[in-house]
Image 1: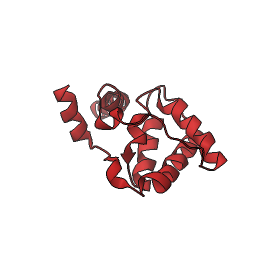
Image 2: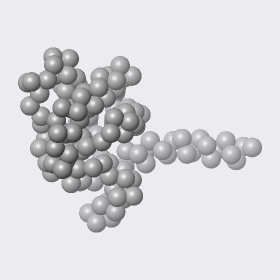
Image 3: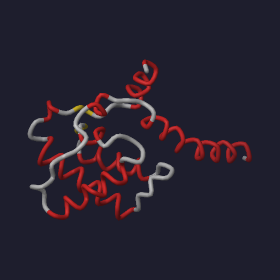
Length: 134
């Protein structure tokens, strides 16, 4: 019983470190694309959310990464939740919702119109392969 509990504690402590290591210290193809979006035609609430997105997400990775990645709405939701739980992200539930809503909006109005201009999100295995090459 104690062994199982100890393993669970170790796993819960190691998981955030593993997730942080997955994306922050590797250059993905998306990182080499544009690092900003002209959101002047977006609704005011999305313009505000864009500023929050830039401020919070740049702490752990390039802003180019999500700007140049295309995902489905459920994938964006999972991605934002995953990023919220990273150490030192400082993203509250309310902010996470705003960031998700911005990413989902941007996906619909910008990326879905020309999906071939963007990168599909990479699996953890694909990221590990890139790390091994760098």
